[in-house]
Length: 124
Image (cartoon, rainbow, N blue to C red; front, side):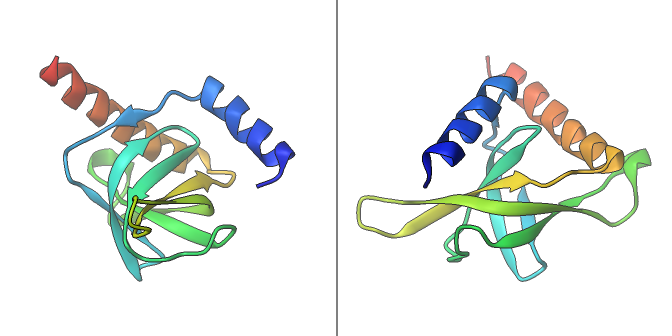
């Protein structure tokens, strides 16, 4: 990873709080792969998955849309920016960064962040 990429990611972390969830809900990546959401921010999501999707791949993260947001799914274009392996070298997940989400897509992401916040408040 280049120094420029590291600096950009670090800057985004400062401007976008991450919210960790243990709810077990999943997202679909390009309708081919599924993974469990571990944390979500306004700029991206960490997805627990054993599917090896190469860094720099463009994927579409599909969120189930509920209520007045939409019917069906909302798909957000994203780029795989890193992957994480465990100590045995087994892939445990990927970090993806959303690419220019629309206002509607931002609303869906915010909706899920609010769900996670409420979920975390109940635990404390």
